[in-house]
Length: 156
Length: 187
Image (cartoon, rainbow over all chains, first blue to last red; front, side, top):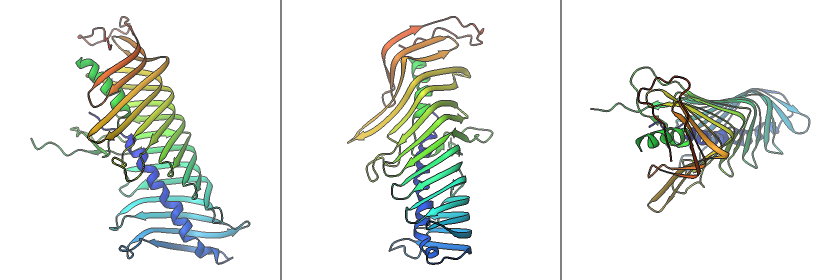
């Protein structure tokens, strides 16, 4: 009997939480400046006893402050790791606007998300992440690809 | 009886049943083609642990194709038993499921909604799939068309309960190739 793919849908939105959280925790670094920044990277660590392990790493090619306490991020990339260092998810957006005061991130552009092993991928155009509500919307052309792992062949 | 089980196992269980593990029964030969899901929009609410695919939802899987206008997946509260697997999966509005069974026989199922529900209470597992339609959910096989207002498939006992059942058989106008073809009465 076929195992079904729907379980993966649920897994997706667990992953989906990662990027915006990382942004939220990382971007106060940028908020301290009014200037333009390039090649930014910020890291969030696990709570003890895994405080030496990276939980999330966010990077961006450029960060430009915008009016209204917003930031224009380019080439955003967020990586989420497990406590044992395994890559769990990667999220990439060519461009997005982050609003620290509202704890929101949005873009009319593309969002791509994939699991660490690459077997689960979601992409779409236009997204909104509301950190306080823990709510993510992908607005257009959402496409999910799931690669199932074949079961090990029977020994018989 | 065997046909009933096979049919609804495929239509319902295979279409909307879930597994906590992304592992499929191994098939010899070529690698399995990935499953693709397309929709106009998707919403993911981590607070309520709900995911919703909206608008022209299309699921393209090597074993079946599913279309609907809304697909909702619910996870139980974190920390509860079975919290890693959805307890509700609901396909709504113009639900269309196509697949092959029994050596390639095409099956076309339609309804207004298909609901998968999974709960574990103590040592008792309840796992059902309910296909409903207004006026009827419909299953079309080469051997005939089968309809009912509500069809409940128990994934645990593999029993089917139908409400408002109607059976309609028609000749196979396509000149079916199944030499064993006979009216497929579900209820």
